[in-house]
Length: 347
Figure 1 (cartoon, one colour):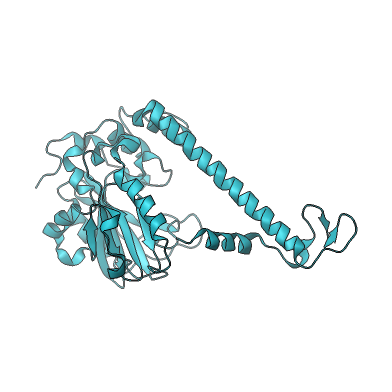
Figure 2: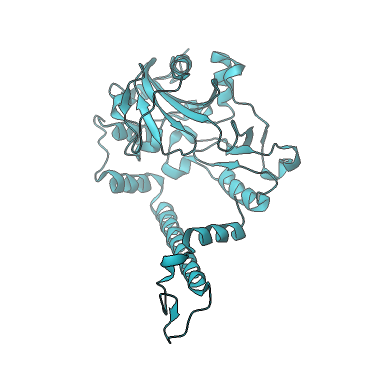
């Protein structure tokens, strides 16, 4: 959330070199100019820092260019063909849908063929709270500071130092604010308003998000920056829990998958696999209750100091565009054609 100045300082720390590393750089060799004169103290470091910043800037420009190309392709061919293009790029083939067998094929079936619009309220991060409240109670909901139609309605001064702002109608449209007084509110508002105005159902053509109205929901940052916060995602299929993945919210990439008994079935990509969180068994119980009336669902929860907060229900894990999620062990018996039943939500 820092300003351009703070980003510049991060670049300096990452690429500013001292000591032996100063023996390189344009026009330099071991702290000596090409003309043989001694380099002024720190000049090599400054040049390398500038070079490093230039490399990072070029990288960002390339990344921005890729995003522009992706967006143009999306606008030209439409969500469905864009999704198929991305699927082929990741998996090296078209999705197999008759019948779908691999986990990512099963999710692709839901994206490309199923009409999930009748349960779109369960994909809305605010509306789903009523569903959770009715089945497991208010105590399993995360505290909420407010829900707003526009960013400019948020009273900045009334917020705690650390908090989270989420768009209610999409995926990954969230911002964690570590310090209310240090954040660039104008920049934050532009980003969130850009997301809020978008129709997430047009990203991949997912019917689950069709008709949802974008709003902004503000919650406390549970545990705060660097807190002992665990993200627990439990898969339920046909009313039966299949296990789940657990990771520390920071870093989000470090995760381990367990079966219902807590045995490791999806090892972490790096590092050791710790035993499941002490609240893992209770998370399975809660997820089983919430998933009982649905063909299949992933229940996403946050656990801090043994308090469990249900955050959202996920039906399209990774949109079928992820090589690790959902793992085959959680989708072995899952038949996405179960979502063809009417009504989808029963009981």
